[in-house]
Image (tube, rainbow, N blue to C red; front, top):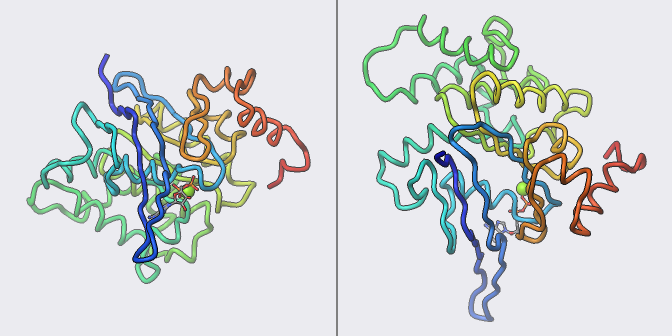
Length: 270
Ligand SMILES: Nc1ncnc2c1ncn2[C@@H]1O[C@H](COP(=O)(O)OP(=O)(O)O)[C@@H](O)[C@H]1O
Ligand SMILES: [Mg+2]
C-alpha cells in the first residue's frame, strides 16, 4: 500500500498587522489525513465558511506553504520542489474552482481555451496537430458528458453555470491528473443541476481511477458522494471516518448539528 497524499499535523497561521501589533489567525490546525494511491477515493472535507477548507486546498495544490506539518504527494513533500517537480505536481493535482466563470477568459471561446491548455501541458515540444488537440479535448469533454461539437465556438457566458463547470472539469482532466481538489464546485451551480455534477465525480473516480477531495459546506452532497468524510470546524478536524458511519452516527456535537441541518426541511433548500 502506498500513499497518494499524506497530511500530517498540518498547520497554517496567517500573520497580519503592522506597527500597532500583530494578529495571528490559525486557519488550519493539526490536520492529518491521507489518501491511498492504490484505491481511489472521494474524500469530502465538510465545514461551514471560515473553517479552513480553502486554505487546506491551497496547501495541497502547492499554492500556499504550511506553517508547520507535513504534506506529501506520492511520497515527496509538496513544498520545496524544484521547478520540474512543481510542474509535475501541477499536472497531477488539478483544481476545480467554485466559480467556473473565473476559471475562463471571457474573451476566449472555451474550445480555444481547451486547445491551448492541451498544448501547454505537453512535456514534449514536438509539434502537435490540430486534429490531435481536438481529439484530446473531445476525449476530456466526453468524460464530463459533453462533446467538442457542443461547445465549439461558444464563449463562457453563452454556457450555463452547470455546463461551464463541466467544461472546467474537462479542462482539469486534460493533464490526466491523479487527484482533483474541488473547492465548493457546485455552490454556484443551479440547485437542479448540482447532483448531476456531484454524480460526475463518482463516475470519474470509477472510470479514470481519480481520487477527489470534495470540499463543501453541504453534508448532504458529501454523504451522497463520498467514501470518507472529514468534518472541520475552526481549522480543526472534529471528526473523520467512513461517510456512512459519520452520517448514521455522528459523534461530535458539530457533526450532529450539521446532520440536523441536512434533515431539516426548512434548510434543505439553502
Ligand atoms: N490569505 C489570508 N490571510 C489572512 N487570513 C486568511 C487568508 N486566507 C484565509 N484566511 C482566514 O483563514 C480562515 C479560514 O479561511 P478559509 O480557508 O477560506 O475557510 P473556508 O474555505 O472553510 O471558508 C478564515 O478566518 C479566513 O479569514
Ligand atoms: Mg472556502
